[in-house]
Image 1 (tube, one colour):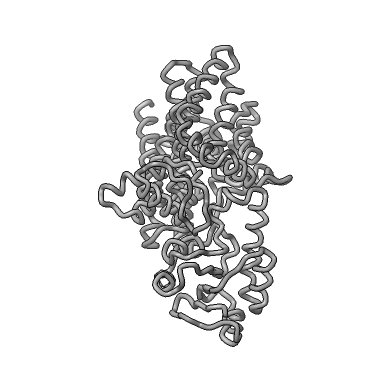
Image 2 (cartoon, helix red, strand yellow):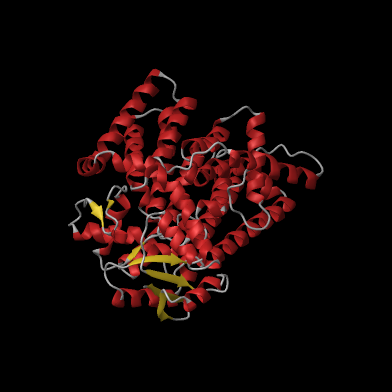
Length: 515
């Protein structure tokens, strides 16, 4: 029995790691360039290197005097790695999927502790490895910081669980170390790490020793992260942090995704989401509430990235749904009677029907994840657009101000808008990255205004003037990325408008100068 259990659990764990790595590296392989974002991080790595690895006061990205307040751990890793002769662009491409793959192992450690079962943890890892939301934003260029943040968030959650269930001094140090890693990697995962540890303490550590250990962990995190936040406060005061804290996207209905289970981003049949819902029901019947509450907490703490964090408990719930309900019931239906075996791996070894069903589940999950990869690979700066941006770099005046029109309504999923300041080395007036450290409560209205600007593609040039006037923003160039999906009305109108001159055009973009 034990041999069968270990072999099937080990096989699922191996498949999870291999297929998880495949779906994490595939988008970058297909795109041939960084996925989606990461342009600002590229510049911040270069800024850090230029300042001899001392934190500069500002980043030169987009020439907006953005405070260099972003947690810098990933930039130090990127900068030091580049000293080995690896280009910064390749670091932005390959480090995120690599760290995201390592997160699968961190998730396994956490799940095995929370479930007190390596066998059940193997199924949870299978769900985590192939749910698109577990990797989508971490394999992008901007995943350079996000992937490190999630890696440390998983590690600190595992260490905190161990600390409050089997207290030991080593777990105090590990929890503080991993917590500091989360804070120094990404501003949002720092908040979610604190919330996860507080929740674990609430469920598992409400003792005098637990309170003392929690205090030591908090103190350790503060001390380990102080060189970063201390430098920022000395240079800028608290303003950048106050600004960033105002951009979390809190709203009256931000928690609805917790009820609807609508955040996994699965393609085709949402099997893993269904298994998570079954696990939710199983744990609720057992009156074991930690995972369900943990899935809700991110939507309260910081809704903007809540879906990516809620995936952790959801994947564990999916593992429970498979191990404690789906596989036992399939085996029982196939055999015509209930089997006394308690472990899913033993049941799987005894039931051909259960193996067929799980093979189908694995196939559907893998195909769905790979199909999602095909979508991700489209979020990259096209080659012709890169050429157009190089023309801007060589020909446009250094103080030029551009409006970047791509037809993408979500400014966080607009690779050309983010990478334009990198490849063209000119200012984009409608790039959102970095503004969270400047705009504070005006950040979300600015985000909505950017969607309105993209709607100008189906309007006249007056739309551009009105948008700039309302934002008290000036511009002297318009960059339009051409594709079959972009309406041609504005492009046609600009060609005829005497206030605009077409100065460059290729198959990827058209650039107009505003007189």
